[in-house]
Length: 74
Image 1 (cartoon, one colour):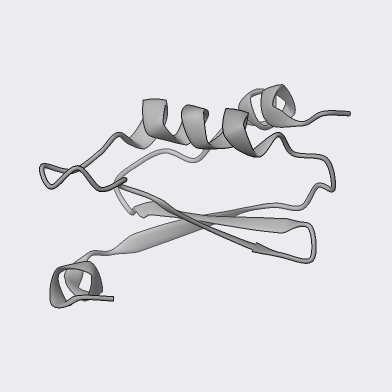
Image 2: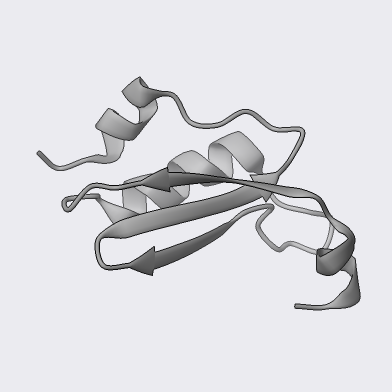
């Protein structure tokens, strides 16, 4: 993490589902949180044991339950 990233306040949301379409999830996050002027995404995703942790700017809204269901395969 560079110095800029360490100065940002981040909020996180956990999606605890086994069957997530990763492409749909990334596209939804790009639409919601966008990209910075440097072309990098304004969010990060960590996947550990079927748990997706999404980190995004603290002033942004979390995904709704409906949006989460849209990216799930089951």
